[in-house]
Length: 181
Image 1 (cartoon, rainbow, N blue to C red):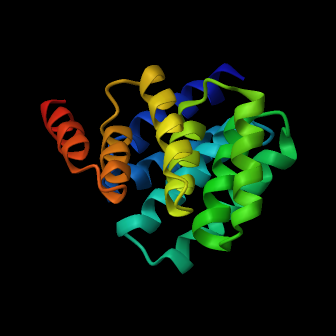
Image 2 (image 1 turned 180 degrees about the horizontal axis):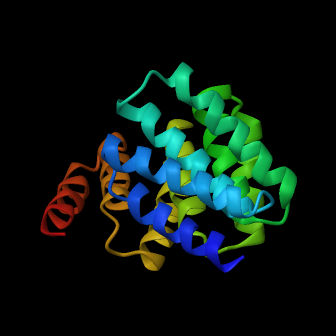
């Protein structure tokens, strides 16, 4: 459904603005896409990611992460071959379920389905950093940056990983690069 697809793209545009107002607008637009096509798995991924983003700063995680989980599970149920669905579900498994093995399986599945999915590399990189697996984390962040070199978030994630490894000069270099962006 081209209307649902266009609404999905519009929702991602709003989601990418990060502020509470824009993310809430993204949720409205993703829901519009779902109204147009109730089996549109990508719209559910957008919805999951938007609810997750709200949990970072704007709402208590217990209020919005269950909604993120429901949307991610729906996306996987609709289309188990959609890498974005597994990436979104992996995010929920890390931050809501604290299911470390399940999260890793979801990120690996996402990358198996689409080795060029930026969000899967970035999210898996964050997971690996949490696990203290810095070398692997850096490889995934670098893969994500090859695909999206101007991502502020990925550059910041990589700087953080270098900082945690004690490689302060590299961390500062990435922070300076991010500042230039």
